Structures are given as C-alpha cells and as structure tokens.
Length: 264
Image 1 (cartoon, rainbow, N blue to C red):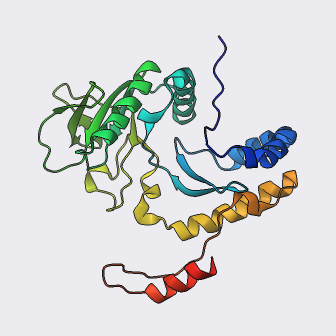
Image 2 (spheres, rainbow, N blue to C red):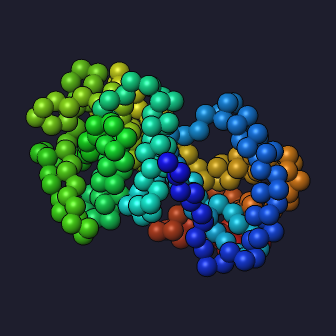
C-alpha cells in the first residue's frame, strides 16, 4: 500500500520555490541533521505550528504542544495519522492499550469538540481504546454532545482513586494520559503525582512557558540548522522583540509595545 504524501496547500506557493528547491537539494543533510537532533532531544508526542507566508519568507509564529484542529486534517491522510500515533505511542510505551484524552475546559466550543472526537477516532483506528475526560468541576456526569458534523462527542468527568485517574462507571483506567489541555491555569491537584504516564509532560503547560523564550530557543536551533545547509536563517525565522510586562486592561507597557512594533 502506497501512503499519500501531504503537501502544504497555500495560495502563495510560487515565490517560495527558491526555499523549496534549496531544501530539496539538501534533503540528505536535512534528514541527517533532524535524526541527530531527535536522538538528543526526543520529538514531542504531538504539536502544531502556525506558519506565516509573506511570499519571500516562510516562518513559524507559534508552536502549540497541546494542539487542536485534528478535525481539519485531510481524510485521505488518515493512514498517515494512524501510523504517526502508533509510532508516537510506542516511543513512550509499547504496550499502551488505553488512552485518556484530557480536554480543555471550554467544552462549549463545538469545533473544538469536533477536534477531540477526531483525535479519539485516530487513536481507536490505531488499535488503542480512547476516551475523553474533563477537569471541569461543574461536570458531574458523562455528557454526550451532538456535533455539527452529525457525530457525537462523549465527555466524562475524571475521578482519582489513589494514584490513578479513571473515568466512567466501568472505571476505565488508562495507561497513558494525553493532555489536550494547555494548563494555562496551572497543574490541578488531581493530576499531580500519578503513577500513569502523562504526555505532554505537565511541566510543558503554558504557566511554565513564555513565547519570548520560545523564539529565543528557536533562533538558536534555526541558525544551527541553516549552517548545515547553507541557508540564510532570516528566510525561515520570525522577527521578534521582547517588551517585558504588559497589561492590556490597565494599558501598562503600551509605550514599549508601540516602540518595538515600530522597530519591527
């Protein structure tokens, strides 16, 4: 069976041909460098990257370790999705049979729920039993929500027994917990000190990260990468500046923001 090859779909593909040609001409160096880096720093379980295409430059502006949008994937790529999930799970633990997906609390967003249902389906088609759990304190019983696609999303409140998280009347006990909640409010007590594996790790929550630091680390990585293939890092790196403390509600730090926007 020949798997489909995904391509970037964009209305502005022409001007990027120079970058594309350069990457293809150095594909051996690219693959070698990536393989070496993954051995040093393992790839995250899953992630999404927002790209901006200016016509002559293609750069990431955001990286999400708790990605959504699985409902937007091309159905033709489902075999690739299944293969990717199987590979990612095996890197963590080869004998995972049950997975619990921890959802964001804004479960009234039907498109986000479409995303969760599709993610659950990918796990199921990969041969892994998957359920969706919620940390919402106001959710006291399992809830079925009808989605715009005609599918249903079944969300269950999590419960903790000793050092394990369970869901459902059947006490579904996952061996792997997959976070789709960015933990921007911190790590809730119910998730702390569990004996079950959790990915991405709780330390990767937004409460512990800053985008300014992310861009700094990305710049270091992209410079090392571009040195290997003789490419100007500017072509695939965003421009950014750091303002420090800004409070939009109180209009604090607006002068710094305006100044740095002007510089960029």
